[in-house]
Image 1 (tube, rainbow, N blue to C red):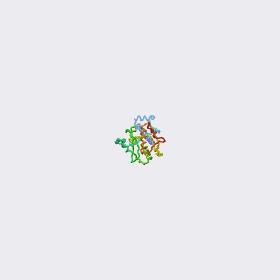
Image 2 (image 1 turned 90 degrees about the vertical axis):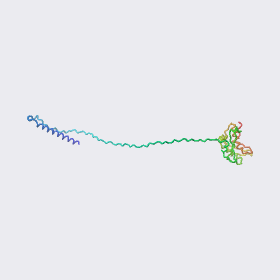
Image 3 (image 1 turned 180 degrees about the vertical axis):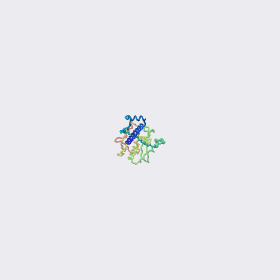
Image 4 (image 1 turned 60 degrees about the vertical axis):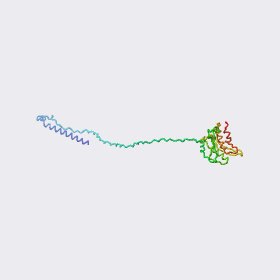
Length: 252
């Protein structure tokens, strides 16, 4: 493409000078006669136009930067999506429920006998009813039937009655006071020795006290329990090798 432009320019320049030369010749032929003769007489002064040598070194045009427009790229616009909005619901608050706490009502002394499932001709046990004006520092003994029937064997019946009595460890049974709550006794053996005495052997522990009234209540509770059988011979009770009567001293 560049060589074609170059050739066109050379042809254009050549034609230009040819036209210029023809114009000069035409103008020279149109002069007055005197001037023409003078020109003949002085041929040296006659200007002869000759074509200029052709230009061979022609500056090539520098290539021009051609800007190519790039069509803009379409950027996809994200389509908005519908976002679900949680609508708060009215949740009913739990209503406070009143908790009814049962109250323990102590039954009157007469009704406390219903706490024990007594059977006819059963062995009995004893507790203390306080503040009755009784002989044990103002308190009284209360005899309670049990679910343990008598056998007629005095040794077995004594053992059964004391075992039942020693099974209660709380301070109160219903509204009855239990002096044995401070002790932990277990029946070991009940036997008749030499046909003269009934010996009761128990084991365990006793929290001794110098409270005369407490000792009176405890002694009355135990002795009344094993004395209910109306033995014709004396009854002694021992804790290990010590006489229980000596440990429960009522003479303080």
